[in-house]
Amino acid sequence: MSLATAGQSSGASVANLVPRTLHAIGPQGLAWWQWLALPVLVVGGLALGQLLGAITRGLLMRVARRTASHWDERWLVRISPALTAVWAMAVMAIGLPWLELPPNAAGLASAALTAASGVAVFWMLWRSVDTLIELVVERSWAAGDPSARSMLLVGGNLLKAAVMVMGAVTTAAALGYPVATLIAGLGIGGIAFAFGAQKTVEHLFGSIALATDQPCRVGDAVKVDDVTGTVEYIGARSTRIRTADRTLVTIPNGRLADSRIESYSARDRIRLGTTISLSYDATETQVRAVVDGVGRLLHAHPLIWSDVAVAKLAALNPTTIDIEILCWFATTDFDAYRTARQDVLLGIMHVVEASGAKFAALPPAAPPPPALPAG
Image 1 (cartoon, rainbow, N blue to C red):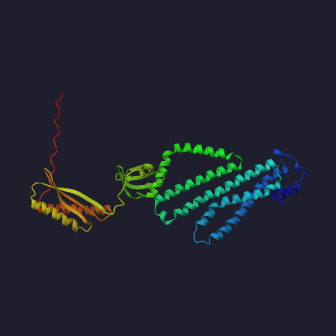
Image 2: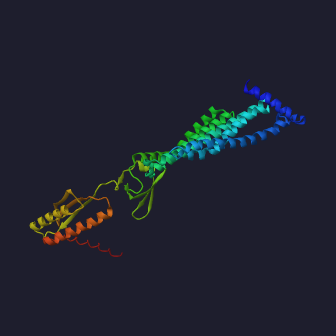
Image 3: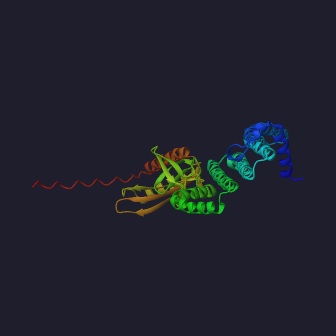
């Protein structure tokens, strides 16, 4: 015997149990007992759905607690309302044939139950996305990377939006709406949205590029075009850089991905390049003493990378004797670099004084032009 036949025979037996006065036809061609049975079916379906959902959740939770991970328990807690709704729709679908509704009403009720079941299923999928994103974010490669966490959250929102769109299309199809027309409309709307949100999409893909290549991270000292500072935040649309003046510069990620990013935090040593100028009162012997003394100073310093430490006569300018000094400090701590740089510069002053030479004096400032006579 088919389900429909069983439902009809059961519906007939149910009709025989109600008073004859309720067999009168009411609104929409339904008998009054059928109108009274519909809310009973809904309430009963919700009650049984709650009970079956609790039983199912309890059984699955017992299995989940035996596993080493905790994500399955969090997933069950999240989908519990949707699971209850699925069971409620199933109970109503089983009880619907017992009402022996006319074909039009039965078709409408069946379509409504199908649409509601689709909503419950996609609701379950929508809530499962949160658990999936949490599971990925907790991985070691993402836990210590704020940029990766930000991009995973953006990706999760996009995935949830896709689930919502699929759920809306499925629900519309279950209710009898022309899905092809709806999809075509969504396509046209998507094109219009793409044109309107072109910059937003550009910044979003810029965020993906930054998360993939990682030219800079939160906390890095960087220089982007003419902006120098520390990266404070990398979001889905823009990146914020705190400058030395404590101002906050916000750069869209689409522009940042196409910019030249110089990361000071990625360097393995810090360079010192300077030129000292001696006056022409210095003799050749004094100049050689300064060059040799500065060279020994650089090679003797514990923080200076000894492979490249340059102190050489660079130029004989019209008013100065220039000595080029170039070295690298084997540290990435800028405070330690400043202290070591001070030691080196004071040592250079001592070498010059000990040689008997003198630093070249600055040329006098040019006098201001005479004022034009009035009139």
